[in-house]
Image (cartoon, rainbow, N blue to C red):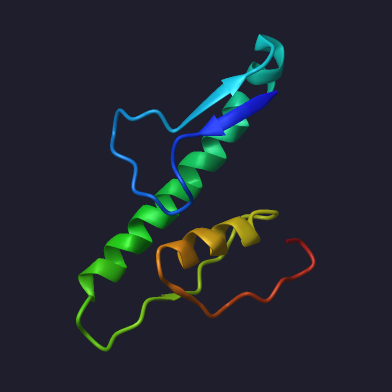
Length: 98
C-alpha cells in the first residue's frame, strides 16, 4: 500500500479538504482503515485543541504545559501533536505499560 499526503505536519487542514490519498488493494486499505481513522482523529483533536489554547494566551507570559495521560502505545505520537501545536511537554516519564 502507498499513501501520499497533501499537507505537512502541523499544517492547519480545513473541513472538506483531502488530507491524504491511499493506493493499494481494497483488502489492505479496509483492514487498517478504522484504526487509522481513530488514531488520526485523536491526534488531530489533540493538536487542534492545544493550538487553540496556545492562541488564547498569545501575547502573555503564560505557557501551555502538556501533562496529559496518554493511551498505551501512543505516548510519543500524543506528545508530538502537542509539541507541533507549541505546548511544552513536562510529563514524559514512561511506565511499564506505555
